[in-house]
Length: 247
Ligand code: 13P
Image (cartoon, rainbow, N blue to C red):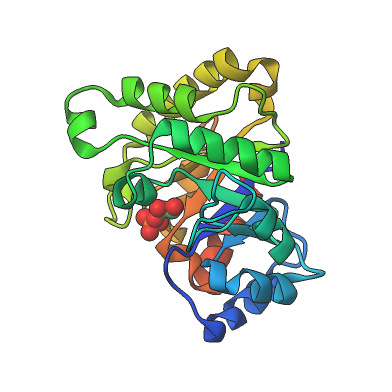
């Protein structure tokens, strides 16, 4: 399968940041992996313009489950597609925390995204308290079952495993811990969507940097990364793309 280096810009970036996209595209004109940047909604259309004709793909960070209507401040999957996005991140832990998103809501959003023609990147991950209590597999298994559409395929779904305590902290699980979760997710995803699970990219996210990317990408069932802070600069994200291309 073709691996995926995805960048989540979160609530960062203005027009001045678009030079990072052209720099990334120039440095990696033909990478051996897919490259995706998910900027704030205000930048999607402009970033898509800059990325046109390059291997850089563009994604959103959330969408509403409905295609249109009276939902002030929200954006539909159709609107993301219309703006030039091909992917959308759903159920990120920051949205699960800041906006109290439930598995059922993430599932509805993922169904809407896929129906609109987007690739849904569904995020799951345990808190530190849940890991300390030995509940990691329980938690991610429940999230996966509750937020992944049963009819998703390798072409419409990506899963991102992001331990909440590893996001933006500089801390990561051990390589063995990541390996355990990713192998478990492959098995549980097979139970949920069947044979298509073998081709679904399973991304690791949480403090991925140029300095730890190579060892993380060597782990079985790690098919790429969802990168936060290190995706904001073309040099850092490009180094992660290079590590994934070499894996
Ligand atoms: P960091 O790479 O900044 O830890 O963020 C990870 C993340 O939340 C990506 O969605």
